[in-house]
Length: 248
Image 1 (cartoon, rainbow, N blue to C red):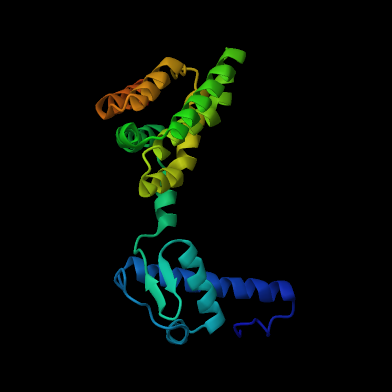
Image 2 (tube, one colour; image 1 turned 60 degrees about the horizontal axis):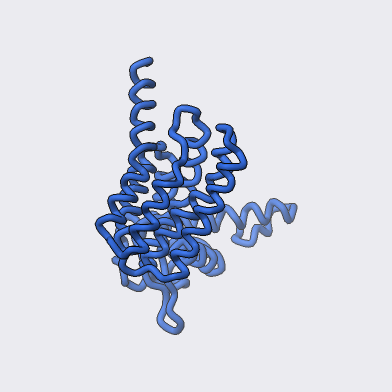
C-alpha cells in the first residue's frame, strides 16, 4: 500500500490507511522520545531523515510531529527545526491519573493545594479573593436550596471552582497547569465522594477559614486550613476502604 492509499478502492479505506500510518509514526516517535533517543533540548532529525527511518512519507512525519508538539513532547522553532521538549509522555501520565482511586487523588490534592494555599496567602490579589468568595457563595446557595443528600452532587462544580481559584491565586503557572491537567480526575473523585452517602457533608465554614487565612496573608494558617479542609473526606475514604477490605 502506498502512503496515500491509492491501491485501496474506497476513499474511506484510503483515509483509514492514512490515519493508521500517522498513528504508527506517532507511536514510533513517542517510543524513541520516552526511551531517550534524543535528549531534552536536542534537535531531532529532519522530516526527510525521519521519513527514511520510519519508512513513511514526509507528510506523515509532519503530521506525527505536529501531534507530539501539541502533546508537549516536541517544540518547533522557526528556521531552526524541531527540538525535544519532554521525554515524558503526558498521555501516559493522564492515563495513570485516571486509573487512580479517590484516596490517591485526595492525597495529591492535599500536596498541590496545600502549597498553593501557602503561596496564595502571599501573592493573592483582590480579584482572587473575590473569585473564591463568589464560588463559595454559590456553593452555599446550592446547599441551602438542596439540603437533601442528592443536592451535594450539584455542588461539585462550584467546589472545584473554589479550589481552582485558590490554586490560581498562587500565581504559579506551572502549578496551575499541573492542577488543570489533574482537574478531570479531581472532578471525578469529587463526584464519587459526594455521591456516596457515607462521605461527610460539605462544610462551608472550613472553606471560609481558608479564604480568611489567605486574605490575612498568613501562609502557615492557609496551609493548615487547606489540609484541614481535605482531612475529613480523606479520613472518610480511608474508613470506607478499611471496611471494604474487611469484607473481602
